[in-house]
Length: 295
Image (tube, rainbow, N blue to C red; front, side, top):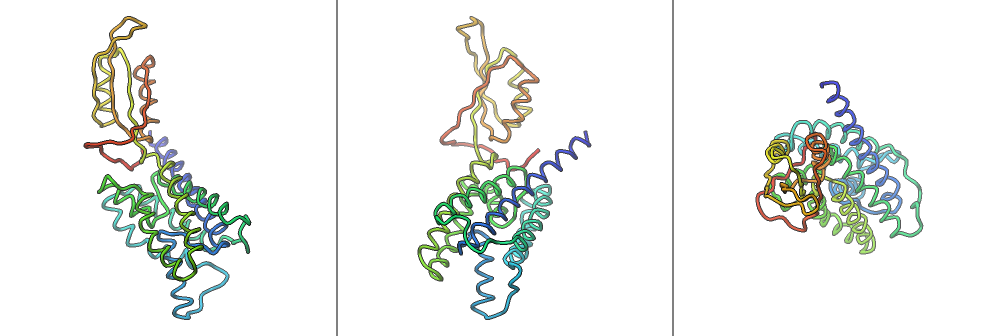
């Protein structure tokens, strides 16, 4: 059992690192050549770099990008904040991920010009890669730090927030700076990049997607087992199968998309003949517990 848990932990960590690597590639290969601002804490680090280099006239190394180093320093207090609220496992993965991401953002070579001549295409593809990378890291129980940690903390305490939305909110200040320092076009393209990344992030971050699951079974004990397994409320009622002409039990519960993969395995084990279908609810009102951890 411990060996299996160890393998799973290494697999989760691998996916987290792939996620931060994708974000770093999007930053270095799409944002930097286009002269855009990333938003979030990376965007704040870009602003701090500008203040140090241009406003204060302090020379900075030209062979490395100090934005990664600044972002790493900014994450230190956030990590301590998240330790109490989000959990130890998430923070350990995040510490490793932040170090790797900051290193890659510092040393990865950046193309001298944008990969695509079309600025909008550059933003769409770069934003999609960045959003997928951040969402992948969050889905696997880690993050690249910054607004990811702030978003996770807010998602824990305030159900109306999502990681992508809190990031978009923080980005507003960054893009106002870009609009004032450069021009509206730079701010607009930076905003497009962030918007695409936000949409992709919230789609990939499975713990943020709610599902309503209906399960039809003849097993009278399945409802109690579902409650024990998911730790969520299950509503059950009697039904009638017109095709089989037999009584059935219908169970309904609301989970997140990440939990569904484990519930599927549980159903196949407990009642292989059960019939289940999943609905995406447009809105949920009531006491739905947001769970951001991974197993």
